Image 1 (cartoon, rainbow, N blue to C red):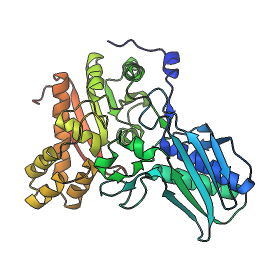
Image 2 (cartoon, rainbow, N blue to C red; image 1 turned 60 degrees about the vertical axis):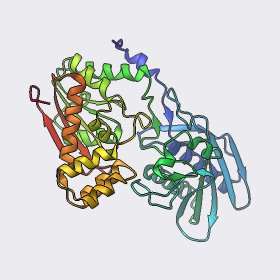
Image 3 (spheres, rainbow, N blue to C red; image 1 turned 135 degrees about the vertical axis):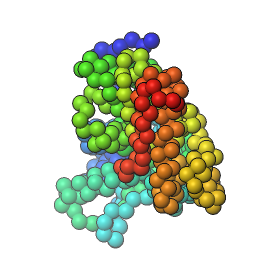
Image 4 (cartoon, rainbow, N blue to C red; image 1 turned 90 degrees about the vertical axis):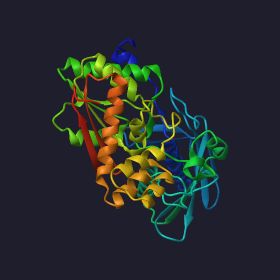
Length: 372
């Protein structure tokens, strides 16, 4: 059993920064250097998580019509494949108005559907794109400049780094993805993080709560808060990838009702019985998803699309487009049953499924004592 950490111990968990945050900081530094013709050594940006962060600019080169700045990505206490990578932004003036953003060397290109970026575009996800656009607009406004700007994000060793990721299987070719919805990376695979889960459950129980909402991240937590507005703040616990661990601790610590809120990718794995849902833990079983689709009456032509899909989100899009709402309820039911088998019953478990953009897809509940 893990010991309960003190708040002081929890504060020692060192978070890192996402590739998206690093790219945003370098874009700000490069544009500032281009405007001022002064080498930049630091860039401070506001993160989606709601706080400022400063980045050391390791290199800065200024030319007549462009400037390049680079920073080293720090993964914190849970370094991933991109930890230590140099991430750069090259900013130049262009004749066309507005801000254009593209990927350079080491940033992958999307070649398959099912991802939040259209085929053919650089693999820079929506939140980092928004962050970069906003920081560039802010710098232009601060200096009173009204000119077109082009930003190119590069990762010199990105193509080599990408071999350690699932990018190629997802159809992202030529480099890594620029990711991140909060700007920071919380160490999801450390004993410290597991201890923080236990601490969170104990706080919820000590405040009289026997109903907790567990989510895989900040975005799904927001959806959970909207779905369960009656619950206090301490009832919401980010379990990261540790589904099985969190469920077992909930049962051990006396929680009676567990609501799981998430999206297609990781919840498709839970439905299969995978209780550690890190991207490297196990692939999504598209044959399994096709069996669920078949059980709700999907024709063979759709089943073929499901089996040939690139991501679980793409499967969701296919079923949503053709009106098979029952598919999502079935998937949620499988999540409930797999979760109850993991802890050998003794809980009421309900599962709610959302799209990346927050569209509610379906829900299932299995009460404590019901057959699973």
